[in-house]
Image (cartoon, rainbow, N blue to C red):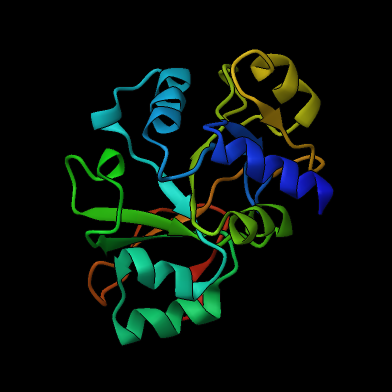
Length: 194
């Protein structure tokens, strides 16, 4: 918990961290810190208005704070989460403007990895999440925390070593209505929950 509290203090002070999930390693910050979100955009080389970030929640009750969730969707998420899924939902007015400038939807994750969930629980609100890509033309995602540290040590405040990551991202599900369309097939198999 001492390390988790150190990470939470860093996030509260505008820090950017890299952390393990149940899929690929992610980069993120406190969703309420506009400057930190802009820093993540700068590291990723994208404009804040073009961001396509999701955020990590600790549990289902956190999701309802930021997005509209139908009963059918809630039942599905209760079965599938924590797990390797990103659910795209209609956001509400609690989603920070920097994350919802040009869109009305938000991506939400509850990974099956205790580290990011503990961070969010201690922080008291979600963290932004975006995948760590690799420059390699064959390997799409970085999985080795030591190599991730070497590459990003001068750009982020903390790199959390959670062991080797997965090299498949989460499955992205459009859950803005109850048709549940797969936008990107990743590690999660939604069919087993439908």
